[in-house]
Image 1 (spheres, helix red, strand yellow):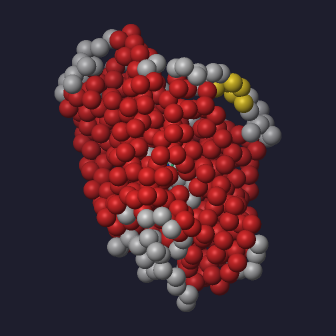
Image 2 (image 1 turned 45 degrees about the vertical axis):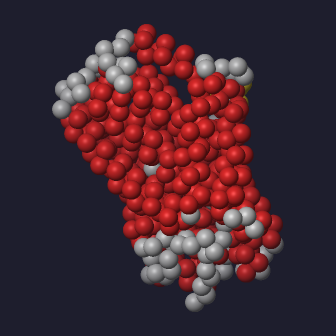
Image 3 (image 1 turned 120 degrees about the vertical axis):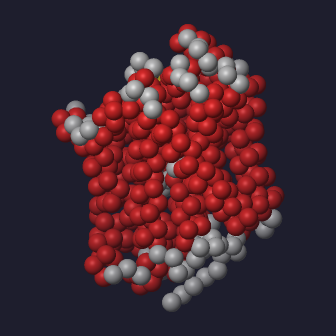
Length: 459
Ligand code: TRP
């Protein structure tokens, strides 16, 4: 068996890895898109399709990314380089690492701006600003806020500083410790919010919306959404899982921990749905997603409930933790690369990468006010300038392409001995995984990609 060492350190145990990876995969998507998507596409029926997509597409690619990272034990760029050379292929594969790192930085630049909004909303809720507020009131608050670039920049800066602080401390003292504190706290907050929601008069309605299977709503489009989300929710295609794999102790099982992480992620989404929709329905509002849900309808719903100052604040705190543990993961691939290739100390590397991301974030800050523009792409109209450009570029183009290539590399280019060694699976399991990453996952991601850019039309 062939074992390299990571110069950045490693997770202390299997649980440390599971918590760190859970921190990376549980993010805004679990809160503001996915519960709504489940509810709108057939509830329990959609959950079944989604679980199948996790097993056939998401988890195999996650296993592939972890195996690549752990085998090479470097940043994504150097891991791809090392493994391509080791298996006798062209070092051009390292550009896949660059694509991942570039995507992670671009993605973080706008993720941070939105996460900053949650900080502001935690303050607003905590100081009782939403108590008894009207629909016009929440709208005015939100639009005044996003029209003020100074405010947006302030919270984006604060959030980036929080992210950079953790990453600058290092793998064990920073990333691992943050996850060990924040992930359990997040889970406890979630359960507390579920209990709060359980006491409203709309829990049953929310339960039905989220979980009652309605097979008539399952369409091909829903299947595609499930495939895309199974990939996105596991934070694949940005080098994050690969670099977290590089820090994984050799004795930890990649397969078992991937399944645990995917399972916790799914559970979190369902628990979020059961916490959020009872509040929304009890306020007489419709289920929505995105900024509408987080910054308009939820404050409005909270404003009408008892104890909302306390529970509303806990809710935004939960969002901040979810976003924070994802953001530190997003900065790590670039930081690891700067340390390896440019001899930077971790502090300097974090400062450098973080500052670039912060500066890129300014484009998003101005997307909601001074530089707002509309454009149409792949058949959809987008309202918010650069924010939407970055979002489309990363999630619709770079991520699926990187996902396809990671699966193909692990399935076709990495030697059988190397992946076997790293995965240590039973024969039948290994054969199934290899079949999935060779044929099924790349094909599924290709279909997702071609549909999202409008080459394949469903109806
Ligand atoms: N999985 C995250 C979510 O559900 C979003 C995400 C996608 C992400 N790719 C990532 C987070 C890479 C961290 C790193 O919201």
